[in-house]
Each structure stands twice: as C-alpha cells, then as structure tokens.
Image (cartoon, rainbow, N blue to C red; front, top):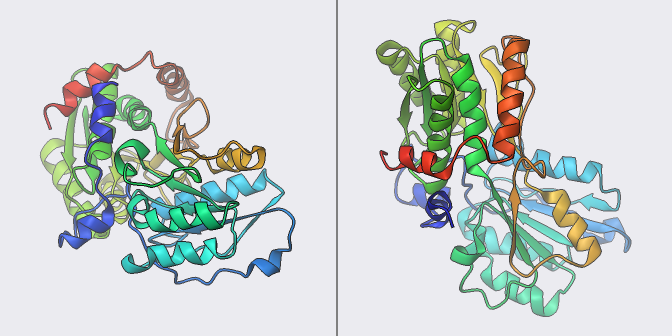
Length: 368
C-alpha cells in the first residue's frame, strides 16, 4: 500500500466528532456527520411490491451546496438510469443520537438500499446492520467515505454492506493542474475544514500537481477553518491575497468556500479564480468559479450489484476517473480553449496514474 493510501486509511475522524470537541469552526466537508430524521419517509406500501427502493440519510440538507447536495445529486443521477428504483424521502438534518433509529425505520420497511452520507455511520449502524442481516435479508447498506478494514472491524457481519472511497489523489491533482495553468501570480490557496488524512491528501496532490506545471508555484493553506463560517473564508482569502498575492483558490470546507469566493470576487473576478467542489457550480451566479472537481458516489454501481445479487461482503467501491467517480465539471469562459486542451491532456495522465507519483504527494504531505 502506498504511503498516501496509508495516510488516508488511518485515524478517520467525522465532522460530528469535530463538533463534539467544541470545534465550531473546525470540521470538514469531506466527512459528513450523522443525523436524525427530520424528513419523513414514505411507507413501503406506497410503492407496491415490484421494483427497488432506496433511501438516504444525511447530516445536512440537499441544498447545502456541498457534501450532502453532492450525495443527493449522485443519487438523482443513479435513479435516472435505473428505472426499477424509487427514492424515498431523504432524512435531512439528522441529529447525532438518531442515526441508528433513522436507519432502522428504513430497515423495518425492507428498503433495498440505505445510504449513509459519511463514515460516522460505520459505527452508528453496527447493530442495525446485524439486525438487518438476520431479519431483513433484502436490505443493503452503502456508507460513503469509509474504509471497512479500519472502521468496521468490529462488525459481526459485513454481508449486507459496501462502502465508497473517492480517489483523493486524483481529485487534488485535477484541481492542481487547473490552478497551475490559471495562476498568474504563482501563488495558490487551499482551505480545509480540519487536518484530516483525506484533506491532507487533497491539498498535497493539489500543490504537487500545480508545481509539476510550474515548480515556482507556492501554496497557502489552512486546515482549521471549519465548515460553517463563510466570513472566515473571506478573511483568510483576503489575507492571502494581500500578503502572498494568491489568485487561485480550491476549498474543502463547504460554507467557508463560499466566503473565499466572495473575497476573490471583491479582488476582481477577471483575475482571481476559484475551483469548486464537490459539485459543478460554474455559472453566471458564480463569477469566480472556473471549473469544479466533481465527486460521484457510485450509487448506480451499488444498485447494479443489488440487482445482480453481487452486492455486499464489506467491499469498498473506489470512485475514480476511470469509473466516473471523479471528474472535472464545466469550464467557464474565463478558461481559454488552449488551457482547456492542456487540462484535458494532463487529466488523461492523471487518470492513467502517470502524471503524479505517490512519492511526490508524500513529499508535500511530510511538510504539513
């Protein structure tokens, strides 16, 4: 296993744990918290006996502009190509203590696929999964951002479970190539919610990729910005623009990223640019966003496996550029065709793992 992957699989922390430690301004968009059911799910009788049902449990809302909206969009994309499937109403804004109850309510309806938006469900659902395996054999669980080997070792059974892990190195490298080609000042920035393995891998690949474009590029970073305080993102970005002439930003901090975009816009949207994630938000209402690193949570693959009877056993689905789990979104008109063509060439190398080595990523990570 590479050093990058070792770092990613060690000591996973959830957003809820960050909040429990009193870190109101310290969290991450890359890891979601757990939650309870604010939305009510539809009764199984509403859907008849044919077809399949899928349900999603999330910590935030389907319009949060980041983590949960990205999951919801992934589910919508999967449903568009799976006509046998029907979605029950998602459980939004789920409170800590109710994660197991929320899942159990779907188990009791024999929902075919229950999706948990974050690694905290790996611990919250241990007893629910055991009950489902024994008493509800048609129920399956997909938990995102989770390494089953390290986070589900105490499970009695993983028969009805699979997880999804994005390729964070590819995500960071794509953002880094865009930043390396778009920066004029040779100074790029990154805001993360918390110093987690996934966030460190993203930033390290981001800077390493940018420096492959131009070794003189410097990176500014903050891993303790939280995920709710947009003004903190504004202030950090303003400071970096003033002190280090930062002109390109990429973020992993949800609402904080919105604040960073505000600072970039105030500095001049024609010269200061943002790379969004994890959903594609390029448009007139986002004048600084030049493209987005997009994550798809591979829900369609899970549906296919359920239909074929091959789902389960604690397998982990890797979301990457090869299977559509990682991609770049649309480009704004501020990215010239020549630069777009260069990005496409580098993206193909990233996809083939010939652009950036694990050692190059680790060399950055070792300095953090």
